[in-house]
Length: 185
Length: 185
DNA sequence: ATGGATTGACTAAAATTTCAGTTAGAGTCG
DNA sequence: CGACTCTAACTGAAATTTTAGTCAATCCAT
Image 1: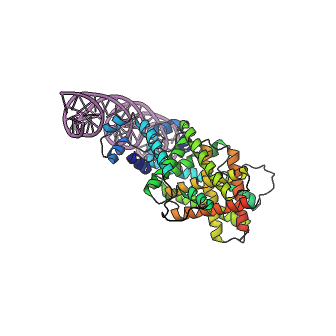
Image 2 (image 1 turned 90 degrees about the vertical axis):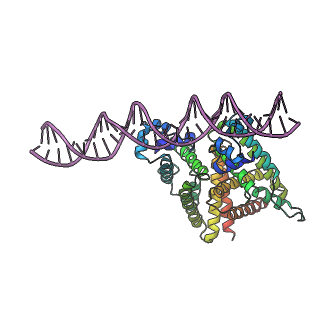
């Protein structure tokens, strides 16, 4: 599964070749077919793997650091996919691929819609913790904007046209802007 | 080139088959190779074509409507890719595909980077017309955020998880927020 | 010695690319 | 005019390459 994640990060879901995956994992192609039914099965299992793994990582923090306040938690949650770490880059790439593939493969849409909704809701909750007086509707649209922005910036970062640091700054500025906005109502 | 844009919008960059393109264009596959060096050449030229074509269309307006003020022009420019029109949807889809493909095909990156830069600069200029007192740096980051947001929302719209109207509202709200922000410095 | 894990060598199908021409029209000369 | 040459656009068919998927044989831990 780790080899599959690496290959997908390198070639994309649609660029994954079973032979390349086998080489990456250091085994024969036949063994891949012994463990997985077919190419679609490889993809399905790998996306599950990536999904599970995405839930488990978080931004690194010194073990003795002070606990995060809601604002910091919000920022961390939004910057989760924008980190200079091989695993995270693999996960972000795979997610981006999934999003892009969903345009052409309707059966992927359901999973994508669900995952997106969960993420947006999570961000809306965190925004609500920083701005307890804001209405649910205002929090929802702010969360939609922030998450869509992160997705757009993530794509630019991964395609090498935007440095990671800059992408992160843009997100933090946007958080600042949205919070100011929610505060002034 | 029009046929290529249609096929890419239907199947994606990596789903484009030279044979399908030939059929769509009503010619033989051999003719494709007469006019283009190879598959990569088709892709490169199609990217240019889509890029050029994106520059030529604009939101429809009644012929007797009042001329646009800078704020309206800005909004139109950002909403350009988010319209319920076959050609525009086709262009947006193809454009999104090319962005996604550029992650895995470095030879596409240069064109992508250039086109993105031009767009960001255009939006920065329009922002500057609405907020003449803002610094160039502030305009630039605002433009980067707005354009990245549009890209993120466009992807959600095209993959069917966000209604077009809602996407457009989110963009307009974001413009409002960025302009307020630029005004208060 | 048994059974799950593994492989090299293979097939079939699909996709890209090449090639040996054909065709239609434009220019040229007598 | 009209017989000719020349060329760009075009095609059918076949070569080549790429890729998913199969299978009989082998390895190896228990």
